[in-house]
Amino acid sequence: MILYRKYRPQKFSDVVGQEHVVRTLQGALQTGKISHAYLFTGPRGTGKTTMARILAKAVNCANPKNSDACAVCDFCTEVETGRAMDLIEIDAASNRGIDEIRTLREGTRFSSMNTGKYKVYVIDECHQLTKEASNALLKTLEEPPAKTLFVLATTEAHKVLPTIISRVQRFDFKKLAVEQIMVKLASISETEKIKIEKDLLRLIALQAEGSLRDAESNFSKLIAFQGKNINEEAVKEVLGIIPFNFFRDWFGFVHQKKQAEATVLVNHIYQSGLDLDNFAKGLLDYARRILVARASPVVAASFQGDIGAEHAQAIVDLAKDLDSKRLSQVIGILMRAREEMKSSPIPQLPLELAIAELTT
Ligand SMILES: [Zn+2]
Image 1: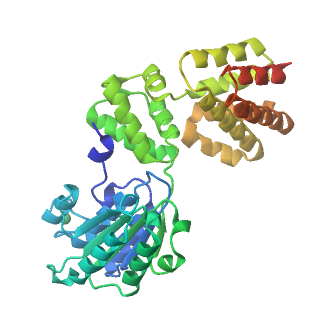
Image 2: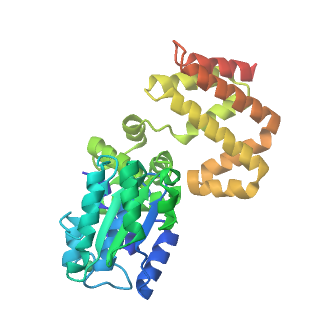
Image 3: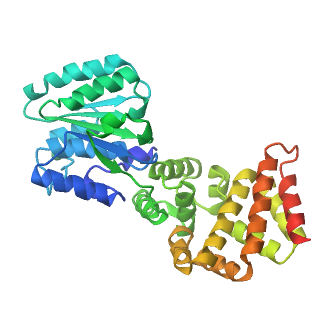
């Protein structure tokens, strides 16, 4: 089951996050002030092409409600099933040639012959267009044909010609917050009747680092392997996600100079098939959170949204015990251990050495 496709937002009101984009686009639709070209830029998996499709629907929808697509009229359903003639999606990563854009330019000439509908071109990964194709696109944007809408999507706006950027309205998509991803995963589990604890949804959301698509595809994988009952073991095994209490325990042991316990923990993680580099990265993230908690209780309070109240409190407690000097020592030694792990013949050795150095 591909959850990402199944639960892809159909209209603006379904979109999770990106409120600034949704609000501005709906406002433009309401006042009839749609721009002829948009640039959607931001990290992967944050809904850029989904938003482009919703916009395409909203401009051509037969029964828009509050400037939102109805998701049921002919045009809306054609977009969903990939049959909409007036929506042309170009993947610049695979179609880098000038032919594509030339066809695009020829195609736009006939746009107004259609039944008053907008012809919408979505160019994904537009930073990968060849120089010639970019120039052809620029010419088209300089003399935009009537009733034509361009949506350029990219993860790397700095690679798009500045002259193109100056001709488009730009929206910066943000990474999704852990809470936002959790809400979406929770609603999927409810619909699919999946039994999973909230803390595990949090781990999946955290692991996705702001990409809803990654979170949903990992969730699909879990369901495929595990069925409707998902426990912590499955999350560890299938996704290789390291539960947060391992980091808390490790820091606790190191703080109390319990070399043996910390070493056993590292070996336990290694033997259960989890990635030690991931663990080291997680330790660094944890150390950073302790550092931030020392500097700013306000920012520390925001950790609750990411990692839950219990783990946020553990970090605040550790921040009281570990001073900045000790923390920077831990971070320095961990960074070095992570670097050494790349060439170590025994994967766990650099972390064991780091523990020895920190506890004796
Ligand atoms: Zn519609």
